Image 1 (cartoon, one colour):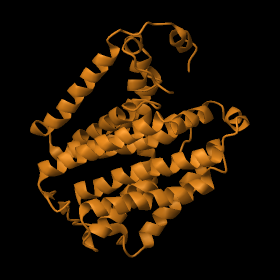
Image 2 (cartoon, helix red, strand yellow):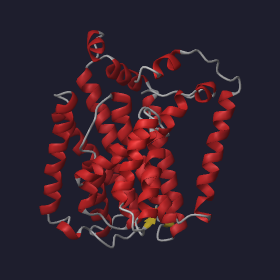
Image 3 (spheres, helix red, strand yellow):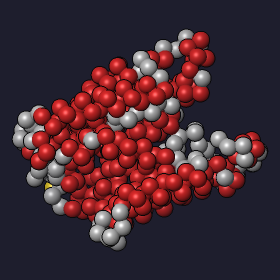
Length: 332
């Protein structure tokens, strides 16, 4: 936090008496926009945005609310994509069962990786997650069921609960939207539960949390597994959206991408990572067919946002007079 932002943050601003109603109205407008969006925008693009938005929100659960920076979240996203794709294509499982397997597989990977990584703090924690993630990447490169560099292709979307044919693009979109909303609701409930409050106290002052008798390692591990499971939910859905799972999903670049999304939108906010994911996905989508190098443009946008919006786009809005007047708040 810069010297200029601290006095502003401490300034008392009365919350608007109808702040709650305004927030609900904004949520209703956003939801209506998401329901109508396929009529105006390419549904596959929208589904990618929702999947990566959920992925970024899951990552933010660990970074923004627990204070743990992981460089290995591609393991859970890509691992779940592989598990789901294999179960649906090779074993013939229905899509809901395949996604559930992906979530459970990601949670199991999170349990193993978290149990090792939480023994260290700071940069050492981040480097351990990166090392373990690279080990999983090379496992996926060599394992038979992943088909190496070819990946798992032509994954059937199947029929959801034996009723809804996900081969229909619009049906698939509304299924992805439902999963996205469910994922955000889970994160919101988790963050605002007593467990979430303890995570925030650990982030702010770990030694004080220890002195109060909390098992810090257990809470960190719980947050890590929950974040991994939700990242796996996004990865499993992504495998059905694009009907393939490849090494790109488990590469270290994917872990860097989700960090970028979260920082652009604003850590410690529920909407921030989603907005950041939307910005990155939009840049990738619309610059892919142009002569502009996508990575350079994305890097420039990131640099500008870091210099101008130090809390991220949504984080700065929440910290502004208008944002606080409307009752918004950031945990960062």
